[in-house]
Image (cartoon, rainbow, N blue to C red; front, side, top):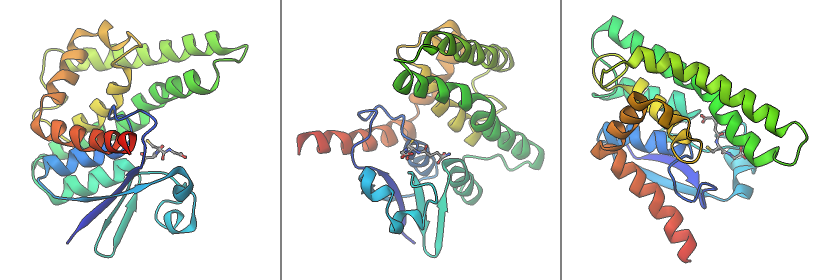
Length: 217
Ligand SMILES: N[C@@H](CCC(=O)N[C@@H](CS)C(=O)NCC(=O)O)C(=O)O
């Protein structure tokens, strides 16, 4: 059955792999599943046809036969449950990998994403510097603990899992410019290790090719 996902026609990150279709592309590549991509303009994302798939008018979505899904975490979980390579077979290890998926999206992503939004939307506000510092402290608070837990291991809990995949996609937002990730050598190495995975590279190249083609056209 054909898998179709949605992505930005022209990603605001200029193809740096930060848009959340990247997670889905990467999971599909890890799982060895081919997929098609429907590109959407910002206007099309807010129209009824897309709202029927994604109630908040966002990307990504996932369609496979009569299944339509939204929320990148739910989509990655769906892929991980149906294919080898993203969740361990052992029940307890699987539960722990799922806990890391939630930790990435629920505990680490909020301050990381709020910082990115604050830098775009609140730069001219009187509270900007104060709020930015607060968000960066919140991020460091999370990364201190994440770094301590990872230690010198390659992945968060045994073999690479969907928990690592989501955590890395969150940390990537801190890679350039913030300087924060660089404060944690083991987390920087963790991200680099993930970026070196062939599946990551294929996913990254595919989403970058969309932006490159849109810019050329
Ligand atoms: N929690 C959602 C967030 C989706 C999301 O924020 N998508 C962004 C792209 S990364 C988007 O579509 N932004 C455009 C908008 O919200 O209008 C998920 O993980 O799928």
